[in-house]
Image (tube, rainbow, N blue to C red; front, side, top):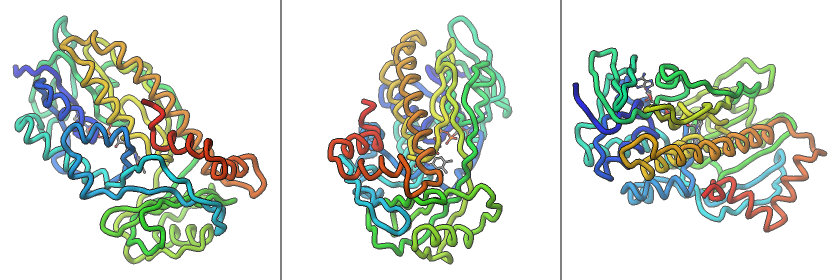
Length: 365
Ligand SMILES: Cc1cc2nc3c(=O)[nH]c(=O)nc-3n(C[C@H](O)[C@H](O)[C@H](O)COP(=O)(O)OP(=O)(O)OC[C@H]3O[C@@H](n4cnc5c(N)ncnc54)[C@H](O)[C@@H]3O)c2cc1C
């Protein structure tokens, strides 16, 4: 049976980042990925400064600089009235997740040409004393000192390792779509609070823009037209609907696994923690976890205990702030404590700075 030091399940952004970081350190890795082709669509778009640092250390700095849009700040509105602009201490970068994964995969091919195995769906594990055996539906089998499940929210690895997670599904539902950018926001994001729920808008490369709207509780229509109507009613902005390149509804979940390390099995990314996408921190948190694991690994699973326990605390913090962001996006009466908080955050430089650091995840370091 083939033997590697670390086997990674899942070639999403987190598994690919981890594989690259480990290969860079001379660790032999295999990445087992069940799909044969990548989805062209991108859930995540925002890469915050700490995750940028990791990607730069991996050698993707030039690609980020040329391909991503640096988000200068956030214009904040209540309905059509502009409340102010949140300047960010460091710019998050907008790059569609599919492109980030393509860059990571190409880079991994250079560092470890044979590492990525497509069409390899992991279905069985056997924990031994000094190794773990991994079996795929295709018949492929491996042994490794450590197995890292980066296989997403419905993680097979988490189930096979019998690691529970706690959390819940939120009542909030959203609709998002990518369009040609016809706004005057340039490289700024825009947040529109309203008595019907939030609308968010983010710049994308190639003069595209993502629009995200919280759905009304009773809303059943999930079409481009209904997104356009929601956005117009709450913001006065007219989206060029015929330019839509992707439309997707999504719900909100918040779950954290009870542990990120059990024997020779570690969990990272959405397999370990699913946080509300409002605020765009899930993939970023996974990338930071990959960096934490890669830096701590010294050949023994025990070497990860402290690092992954610390990352567990970080994940819980991020989950709490994502829950706060989701709460802020709910229908907002004109006279409310939340609206007062937003106004204060825009007017008081120290509070504004704090919000900027939390939003860009700089406070976690
Ligand atoms: C609408 C939306 C917007 C978002 N926006 C942002 C954002 O702007 N910024 C941000 O940081 N995060 C964002 N997120 C969250 C982000 O998309 C996820 O956190 C991220 O995709 C998690 O990456 P991952 O590598 O852990 O898992 P995934 O991307 O889910 O990848 C898991 C991989 O594992 C593979 N796999 C699964 N099971 C097996 C198996 N048994 N064997 C082999 N392979 C397997 C899958 O095929 C897949 O390729 C958003 C999420 C949503 C829903």
